[in-house]
View 1 (cartoon, one colour):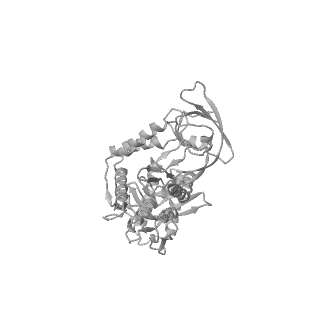
View 2 (tube, one colour):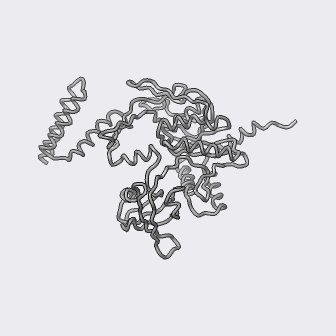
View 3 (tube, helix red, strand yellow):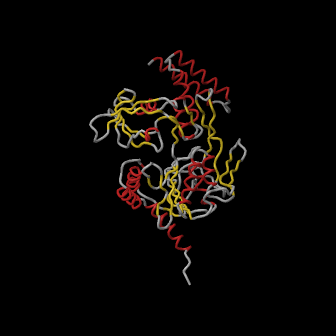
Amino acid sequence: KTKRAEFLKAVEKLLGDIDKRDNVDHMDVKLVLNSVLGASERTVEIPIEVLAMEFAEGMLAELDRFSSMIWPSSVSDFQKQTMGHFYGVGIQITKKLGEPLKVVTPLADSPAFKKGIKTGDIITAVDGRRTNNLSLNRLVSIITGKKGTKVTLTIERPGELKPRQVTIVRDEIRIRTVKGWQRKPDGKWDYTLDAENKIGYIRITQFTDQTRGRLVKALRQIRADGLSSLVLDLRFNPGGLLRASTGVANEFLRAGPIVSTRGRQTRRAEKKANSSGEYLDGDLVVLVNEHSASAAEIVSGAIKDWRRGIIVGERTFGKGSVQNVIPIHRHKAFLRLTTAYYYLPHGRLLHRQNGQKDWGVDPDVSISITPRQMKRWLDIRRETDLIQDIDAEQLSSELAKQTDADFQLNTALLLLRLMKLQQVKPSA
């Protein structure tokens, strides 16, 4: 207690000294940090790693809520989210405390899928280590690994008497951020939502380096299937890379600015469409909600400003800040620092600032839903997203239930059907 009191007294004195100053520069910050480290060594002996993390997090929290550190333990996850790929076996997994690992779904074309791993399989051991007493994060780190290396999973499957051992060679796993309406038996997506009215459906879950390429393939498939209208679903999309969002927007826009960035110490930059997109014609409805953020707002906002499509749903999140990712100590960690803001083609600031009434992207057709309604169709969608053994009739029934429960999607379908009717000319 005495040492703690002495340490806190030293910290409070440093705070008092800083508060008296009109200006603080980087040398002052260094001196304060060194003083805190010295006070700790004399008293409570807090590990230097802990003090460094607390000092950095506290300093960045004073700037804005999106500036932060990416510490070494989180670098692999960060790269996985932004680059859209990692090395492993290709399964989504879940785990309850004290219970073994469970396969939510294998990923299409992954080593696990090719080895016959199925939704609902129980993984009781990984390389002989029981999974019931290991944490989910620990198991993820054990299952993932270098390309070409092997991992052995002990599998129990409902309906089978004996467990089986499956040895899988790790490979590059590409995260599929572009999804369709229903799964085919081979795990690939069917993009047809309404065959009679030739309406397609594409859902983008986040924006990575892989997203634009996947979208182009999906749009070409839609054209090959004879679909002439499209629902682009950006709900629950948290954003991602700027270059991915402008690339996606370019697939729908003929010309003009997509987004611009402005900052106090950064030159204004603007990204423009170049008329090379795959879906420059054809009716379009974009679905958004309050969980659509950042890159998802850039795409929906540009489409709205240029009246390329109709925006349906709820006002978006309002995350329009630009983060530069700065490597620290040979890329062992990264500083994610806000340096500018995003502005839509017609000049609107996307970011939600204190006291501001306008932010994000407002829908053209506002459809609010209750949390209970949302949970109902999301629960169904999670099931229909899985790669699982299910007959076509049952899958069709589940998808019909999902459509009925999703009022925002229903509105999009209604709008596209009305547009189609307007284009039909009566015969003489």
